[in-house]
Length: 63
Image 1 (tube, rainbow, N blue to C red):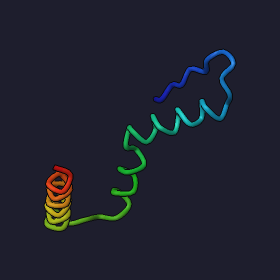
Image 2: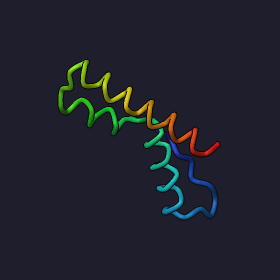
Image 3: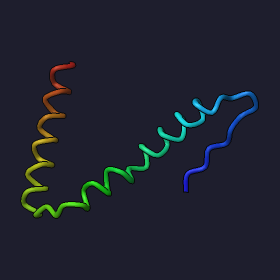
């Protein structure tokens, strides 16, 4: 359960923004979307490898 304490004089918009950040960090929405459609193990593994290669190339480009 996500709890956001509203500080004195804080606007509701700022508190809502903090709530959205916390919610996104938990990964609930990402997990929900992944559970909606079944993905074979081989396909998910291939996706993980592609993502790892992409991240590795990004790190090499920045250096």
